Length: 478
Ligand code: FAD
Ligand code: NAD
Image (cartoon, rainbow, N blue to C red; front, side, top):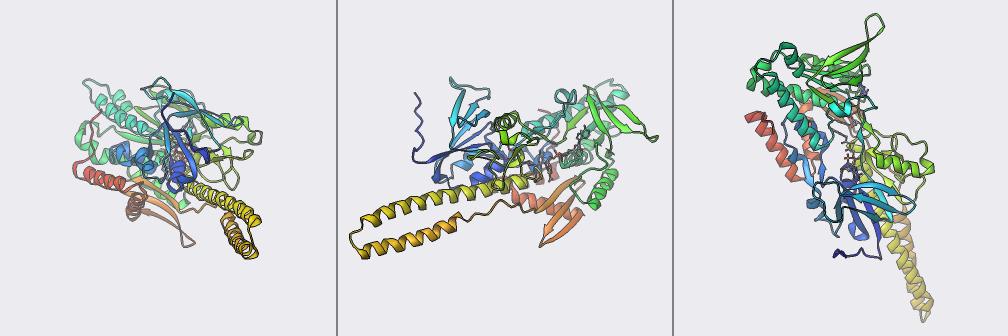
């Protein structure tokens, strides 16, 4: 027997999967009094991903961009249940989510099922590897806090190993070759941060590595940052050149081994060339792939048979082919890029919609009570009074029901490119601005600072920036 209280039977049960951008922005605006709200996620904190690349080199400490979900949920009007678990399967027909506690400490019960009336899927995406051999075994990703910590340790391990007594020249070169695959914003921001780390700190602390430390960014397409304007792409490529980061465009990685990657490019004679590029650190940032949970749900719903990149949703973010399942963020396909900006706006839209749905039910119940009261009213004056109340409520109901479809409002794209420079494509007052440079960097910093989840996060990030400026980044390997 469990001593946890049963959910309120008069309310619908709303299950939310995930504690990322989509799910948390939904929870922020949701009036939790209207539903039995249950949150399931293996991560008991929200992560401010835009500053994650800064954690790989210690410009920012990871806890500064994490907000415990418990801290946030305890401020909600009505209690929200949180289970630290992974949803392993959604059974759409049975309206049940199967969950599993995969953390090191397990109780007698570590897997169970959670029934739902309404379900929001906000589980994000996995790292794409395109089935390229060796990526999972030898590459490091950059999506979660653990990834950033692994990268930080690996950089230091490579530097310390390169200075080990008697290390041969080729091996030193290999160990100090930092390869980043994927020229999207994740790869570019990481490469920029890494070069900053070298220029500002590593060079000073470990002068022996100065000659051989090198960062290479490998991209299959003809240019990096395809979502930015041409001018900013050129600015980024020029800045990287000045920073001595090598960009290898039109180069597709085909295979990864423990010590080198195999990449295909087109040689000057137009023929394909396959070369082996030795590396010490390999960061793999080639975008998103579907989570198995999402793939499985797609397979259960005939209307989703053509969905390849995620759950196809309609303009109200309802998963096509269902009535009571919604999807937000990177696991949903609604013709927008998989960004935090989109996920956050989708989550906020769902919160407004769910709040209004609850109001609609409340008014409909009141209307039903009033029509019964009207029939039982003893005389005409009482009936007239109830009639005017009904009219008023019907007007309110029409107003409440008027919720338009989801419309994404693009605020612009921002990326840090290293050496205190950033690029920004901003939509402002119906105009578009493309800017890059040091001023943009201060804009980037203030924009991200203002977007941080809480005042606590904002202060911690500011302190970290100050700390790393004054004392340099910490080069300990833990
Ligand atoms: P996520 O934020 O990834 O959250 C998914 C949640 O689901 C997590 O809590 C996870 O633990 C949970 N989960 C996973 N599996 C399960 C499961 N089986 N059951 C239950 N829960 C599960 N976008 C921008 O707009 N601007 C930026 O500057 C920017 N910078 C970025 C930098 C980096 C390094 C990265 C990796 C991404 C960046 N993005 C940026 C993209 C942005 O982070 C994503 O688009 C955004 O996180 C998507 O939100 P989401 O809610 O769909 O998923
Ligand atoms: P991405 O999908 O934007 O870029 C991945 C890149 O990897 C592509 O350009 C692709 O051509 C390349 N690639 C794929 N396979 C390759 C191979 N085998 N060899 C070489 N190159 C290969 O991925 P991302 O940068 O991780 O971004 C994911 C999402 O998150 C995007 O929507 C992005 O906009 C968003 N994001 C935004 C920001 C920001 O706004 N500052 C930062 C990070 C991520």
